[in-house]
Amino acid sequence: VVLVSGHLDSWDVGQGAMDDGGGAFISWEALSLIKDLGLRPKRTLRLVLWTGEEQGGIGAKQYYQLHKENISNFDIVMESDEGTFQPSGLGFSGSAEARDIVKEIMTLLQPINVTDVYDNADGTDISYWMRDGVPGASLHNDINKYFWFHHSQGDTMTVQDPNQMNLCAAVWTVVSYVIADMEEMLPR
Image (cartoon, rainbow, N blue to C red; front, side, top):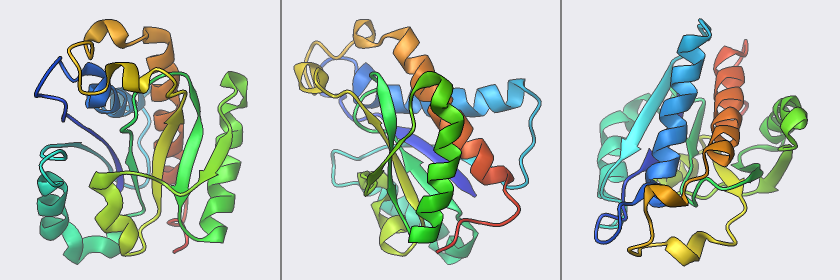
C-alpha cells in the first residue's frame, strides 16, 4: 500500500480549504491523474482523508488500529498538512537507502523545479506508521502565508492558487506512482 492523504480539520472557522483541504485535494487529484492516464502500478495506491486531527488525531489512531496488523504491506505513508502553496520538495523519514531512492525519484520533478528532499516527514496522521518503521513523506511548500489563514475566517477557496495546487498534485502523483510501481518496496 502506498498511502496518500490529507485531512479536514479547520472546521471551527473558515472553510478549511487550505488547512487542510488542499492536502485532501492533491491526494484525490493524484489518484485521479493516475487513473486518467491509464496507469496501473504494481501496488495499491490508497487515499485516506483523515478526520479528527484537531481532536487528538483520533481518526488516524483508529485507522492505525484497524490496519496495523498489515503494517508490512505499507510501503510509504504520505501526508500533506501545511497548505498547498508553491512546492519545493518532500520531507522524508526512513532508512538511508530509502532516502536515496526518494532522492532519485525527485529528480523526475526537475522540469518543475521541485527536487529537494528534507530531513524528517511531518504529519500527525502518519506518525503512528513512521514510529513503527514505515517510510513517510510530507509535502514541503512555501508556508510564508500559511499562518495568515491558518484556522481563521480567511481560510477559504480563494486562498488556493490553482497553478500551485497543480504543482503540488504533480509531486504527489509522481512520487506515489513511482513508489507503487517499483519492483521492490522501499527498504526499511
